[in-house]
Image 1: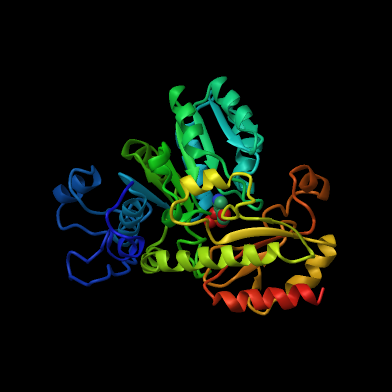
Image 2: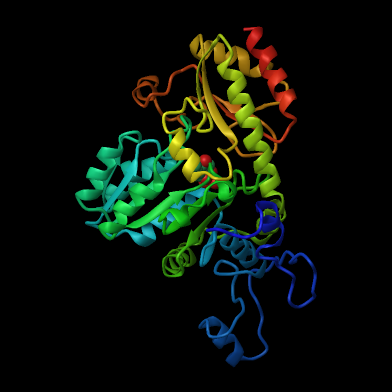
Length: 393
Ligand SMILES: *Cc1c(COP(=O)(O)O)cnc(C)c1O
C-alpha cells in the first residue's frame, strides 16, 4: 500500500461516515436490535442481501458497518468485519478457514491465547498444528514446506518484541497454497501494512492501540473480500459481534490513531535508549534499537515506526520488579497495552500468567522482565519517572 496521503489525514478522512439519512457529520449510535420495514417485499430483498440495509444487529448495524469500512480503508483492505474482542476475531478466523486434516503453522511467541488455540483447541478438531521457534526462520520454512493450509504470524511479538520477516515467510506459504494471516495488534495500521507483505488477512485486538483509551474491548479482521465473507458468515452464526456504542467510540478513537501512535513510537524509542544506558538494566527488547537482532527486517517492514511497546530485564528478578513498578508515578500496573496512559507489568501477571516459572524460563522469559507500553505523556516525564524508580532500587 502506497497511499498518497499522510497517516493523520488517512485517520481523519478515510472511511468518512456521514449519516446518509440525517447528514450528521458523525454517524449516530444506532442502538437497535432489529430494523423495521413497511412491506414484506423490501424486508425480504434486504434479508437476502439484494438491497442495502440491516435486519438484525447480530448480523449488521449501520454504526458498526462504519467502523468496518474505516478499518478496511486504513488497512488498504477490500473488506473488514467486526468482533466483540480480539480473541473472538482470532477464534472465528481459524474456525471459519480450517478443516479437519488441514495443517496450520505458527510461532511459539504468538499472543498467549492465540498460541493456546494452536496447542489445545484446534488439535481437538483434527487440525494439525506446527508451532515453530519464532527466531528460527529455517524451521518455519521447513514446516511450511511439509504442507501448510494456513500460516499465522505476529510481529513484533509479546513480550519479547521478536520480529519475523513477514513477506519472506508469507511468500513461501503462498507457494504451497496457504492462506496467510497476521495479528497486527502491536504494529497498528500506522506502522506496518501486512496486506502489502503478502498477508491475505490482518487481525487486530482493537482493545489495544485502535481503541487506545482503556474503555472497551473489540476486534476486527481485514483483508480479501472472499475470505472476510467466510469469516463474517461464521461470526453471523456464532454471534461475537461488536455493539454500536463501542463502534462509535472506536470511530472517534481512529481519528487520533496516527498522532497517538506517532507519539507512542517516539516515547518507546526514547525510553528504550534511556534504559540501555542504565547499569541495573540487563537487556532491552525493542525493534527500533540497532542492537535488536532483526532490526534490519523491522526497518524494512515497519515504515511508520517501531511501536509503543518494549520490554526490559532488571537485575534482581521478580523481587526487583515488584519494588520498582509501584514507584512509577506515570504508569498503571495493569494487563493492557496501547493506551494513551503508560501501562506496565511483568509477564507473570500479564502475557504469561498461566505459565509456571519453568515454562516462562523455557520460553526465554526471565523473571526480571517488565513489559512497558508507552502512553502519550511527555517523553521527558516518562524518562525522569523511570530514572527515579530505577535509582531508588
Ligand atoms: C490483546 C491481544 C489479543 C487479544 O485481544 P482481546 O481484545 O484481549 O481479546 C490478541 N493479540 C494480541 C497481540 C494482543 O495484544
